[in-house]
Length: 90
Image (cartoon, rainbow, N blue to C red; front, side):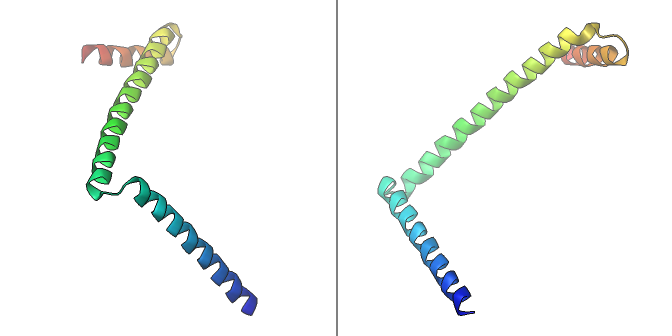
């Protein structure tokens, strides 16, 4: 029982020390709260734009690959042709 308590206290002390170090690092680099908010806002904008551009590239590659697969016989080719026609008509 005592061993468990000592282990728990040691772990809590280590976690508290780690948290204090991270807070010191955070406040050393970001002294003003407005600066932190602005940095996170700009980061969010760039993340959103990057996500949209990445999704556009992936979808374009998928459509291009599906376009190459139109000559596949059977139901798969018909389905791919239907998808391509749907995308082109919109």
